[in-house]
Image (cartoon, helix red, strand yellow):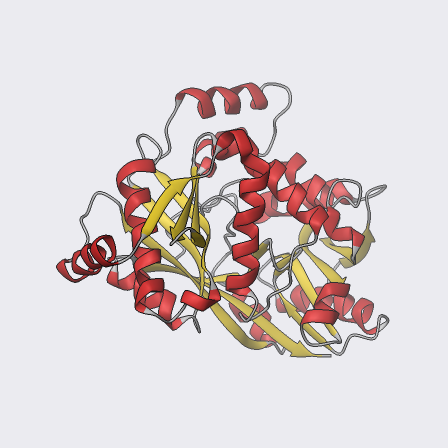
Length: 378
């Protein structure tokens, strides 16, 4: 196919070329943020990522006349087989030149690998777990992505759809200028909550950090268990997430809401360290790590991201639940927002999550980006 070759790579050969594919495609895109190569490499490593305790993956690299032009990963997660539709495999890490034959070759290589493992459906992009980066950007290309969110080229959607994929679901990223006050309607709900509900909002206790975050994740499991795509993180994945969050939590915040002493909801905000990465070009060695540490210590981010927010199921779709969500957002905005931050992205929100979307929009958040998950029968 006009000099196109496809190779399956692993950690012993070809992985470096696999990781560098985006550099060949996004060079002229001002919104692209080069990922930290070491961080991505560790995510793909069974030694570093507990995802691989219950999942297998394969990585395929497309080259044309010796130059990288595309890549894809395919995954089979045993927890997906247990908690979602059995026989569902995932694809992820998708990058491709604007040529349909290249995309088709990548998808067919991944599909063949999945068929050998008795999968009858493929869904993605999911990089790698459902609890990691998921979805393909289909709207909102102008603004660079926030921390742990993806960015893609506009023609990717056409490549995927022409390869026979259809929409599974959309995920929304909401954006807000946190200096703007809430509407009168929202202020009335907040006043009702403060007068008529025995609600308390507090930050996690740093001296009891691990236990507090486990309580947060317990609320997450309860709040999200009925949502599309839900797969509970394992204990090892929880430990891994806590370790990752500890590295940036001193620049962010985790708030918890209690009603009559019962934990009812939580919100997590993290600084958008993607603002510090473009000129590092994906490298921490030899001096990139020092520059990043200095920026984390002495610089401020204009934007923060709320990657996790949840309200216990018993309070969902009630006035109390809406009040918990709004109070968490308002307290975060007024008292715990990292210094210098002006904008907040709340992502991602399922298109089917009408109550949360209503809360976001009532709070003055604007839908800013749309990420799409695709599916195809094998």
